[in-house]
Length: 163
Image 1 (tube, one colour):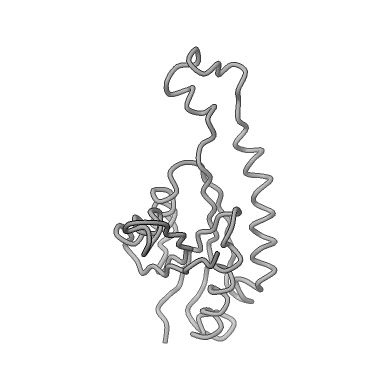
Image 2: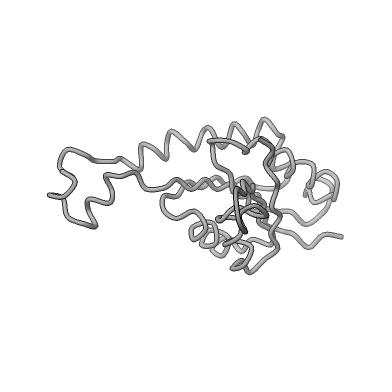
C-alpha cells in the first residue's frame, strides 16, 4: 500500500530523539512499511546534524580574530563518537526492520539545509523529524522543521516533541 522506499529520520541527541524514533517505529509497524512484511521500505536513513562549534568560524573570519591556532575541531572524531549512539538508538527501537538497510549519517552545519541535502542524496520519500516550536510561527513548527517542510521534495512528518 505504501510507496515509501527510503525514510529519512532526522534526530538530535539533545532531546526529543526518543519520541521521533518511537513515532517512526510505530509508523513502520502501523502502516506496514517494513520490508520484512513484504512492503516497500528498503532503507532507513538516520541523520544527525550538529551546528558548527565556534572554532570553525575562525577559518571563515580569520584565525587572528578567534585564535584559531589554539582552537581546532576534529569532525571525524566527533562523527565516530556520534555514529554508534545513532545506531544504538535505532536498535533500541528495532529499526529499520528485518529486510531494510540502516544507514546513519552525521553532518555539521545548518540543520535544515543538510537534512534536505541528505534527503535528496538518498532519494528519501519521507522525512520524519521532531518539532520544538517556541514562539510565532515556531509555535506551530520549529524553524528547522518549518524550513524542511517548505523546501522538501518529499513528504515530511513533523513529530511534536513533548516537554
